[in-house]
Amino acid sequence: MGRSQETFNKKDKEKTKQKKRQDKLAKKEERKANPKDGSLESMMAYVDEFGNISDTPMDPKMKKAISAEDIEIGIPKRENEEIETVREGKVTYYNSDKGYGFIRDAVSQESIFVHVNAVSGTIGENDKVSFERVKGPKGWNAVNVKKK
Image (cartoon, rainbow, N blue to C red; front, side, top):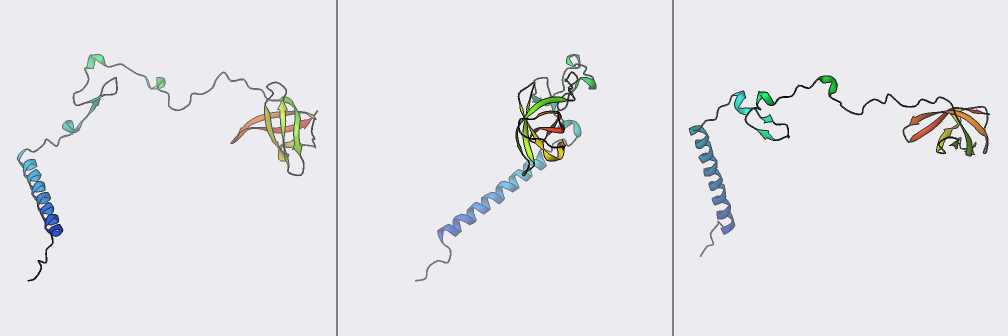
């Protein structure tokens, strides 16, 4: 007596493939029988003032006029920002071998990074200096540093 070449698992897989084919053909026939309108208007979606999507346009009486100048994209410009060109402070740490240090601002008491390339002359710890502050990638940097 010979064993059947087809196992139960193979038969089961073949049945599921046949069922998928039949379902696909049935859906295709249904689409042919009930064709959808492929126009632009049928594909259009509308959004109301609350952000909900609907297939009907909004009532024209409810529309609000918005000027392009009122739309803000990104961060608004700072117009009333204080511009202080020269500041004063005290060197809290400076390593001339490594070429950097920190200055304590006299007004805000914040610690500002200073690099040797931004120093005119030589400075050391506890020296009073004047400098300009610029925003760097990691925070504030002191430039045009001069010993007082």
